[in-house]
Amino acid sequence: MAGVPRVMVVDDHPMWRDAVARDLEDARYEVVATTGEGRQALRVAAAVRPDVVVLDLRLPDLPGVEVARGLAASDHPPRVLVLSASGEHEDVLEAVKAGASGYLVKSASREEFLDAVRRTAEGEPVFTPGLAGLVLGEYRRLATRRSAGDEPRLTDRETEVLRLVAKGLSYRQIAERLVISHRTVQNHVQNTLNKLQLHNRVDLVRYAIERGLDEA
Image 1 (tube, rainbow, N blue to C red):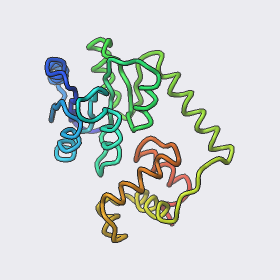
Image 2: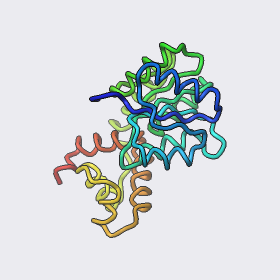
Image 3: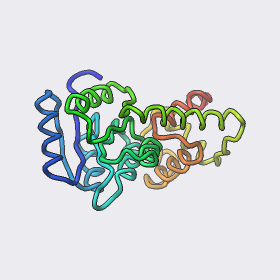
Image 4: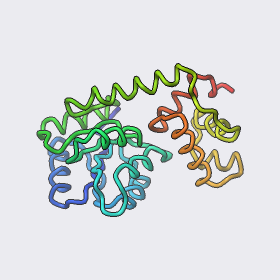
């Protein structure tokens, strides 16, 4: 990623949020926004288009997992690094399935956190030690399931939307092309992600390209 990564911080604790933002600014990252609410985070991210979102899972109005899912489904999906007090396996897997690129517990040191942001911005999956193996195991389980021929079938409309996503069209462009609403396109994409047990739009594009849908 060229230039200084643009980072947004989402955490409902003001002192913690401000401290994280200061650490990022001291390390010469560009902090483009901070917020403590999930729905506001989705609106602000759409406006400022951060490269990385540092996201807490415990938010007052919308679970962090839902925020991650919404960010992954946006026209300009940022990379999401979850920074949470929870190290529970279920929370980690749910965050990854929702589109998070990495997961770090809040007990990590400042140096570990800043390194995690840098690696996330570069596209590298980052996990607190001990959690990486858990996520890898889940990926392997899903891969085994797909290779066994247990892959769900998509509807014709889901396949059509997937093909246009793979061609690089935004959700709004797809909506105009198919004469449907932007929300309907998002619903088709989310249904496809759920059916294929993929995590985000990037995985969806990779899946479509592997099957030649971008050339259809």
